[in-house]
Amino acid sequence: MARWLLEQYWNIPDGTDCHRKAYASTSITTATGLVASAYSLSLNPPDTFLEGVARAGRYTFTAAAIGAVFGLASCVSAQVREKPDDPLNYFIGGCAGGLTLGARMHSYGVGATACMYMGTAAALVKMGQLEGWEVFAKPKV
Image 1 (cartoon, rainbow, N blue to C red):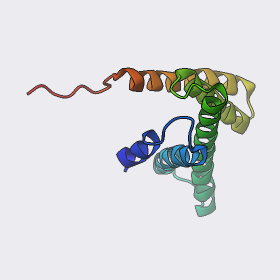
Image 2 (image 1 turned 90 degrees about the horizontal axis):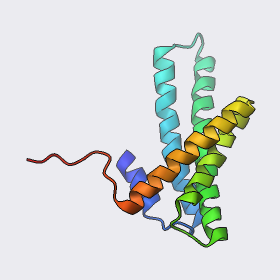
Image 3 (image 1 turned 45 degrees about the vertical axis):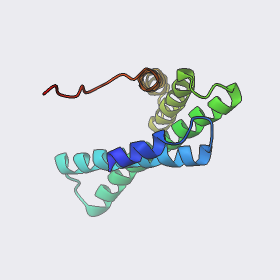
Image 4 (image 1 turned 90 degrees about the vertical axis):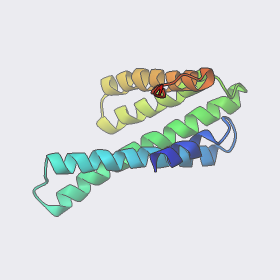
């Protein structure tokens, strides 16, 4: 499923169909939020059912918001700058997603740090895609 979600995102050209790109990035981060909430609930069980639902929703909806903001910011910056395959668009999107996390946590420090780290990570992913980097090399048999 993760491979299908990532292919859905990468098959949309950068700077086009921003609504589809945002939907794809939101679905990826929503799945990530669901996994994070499942780990949180299994490793630290809630006292009540409603507390568990609230914690799962908090993780899932925060991740979904970060993905939506990332998808929209990176796509809109590609359209405005008229440079669709530029890693700076992904840095801008990652930074916007990090600022969303900081707003959710009510912390300027978390927002600034997440902006830098998420922006850098997103730009490196885009550079790797453009240059054909292999994260996991294929085994030589």
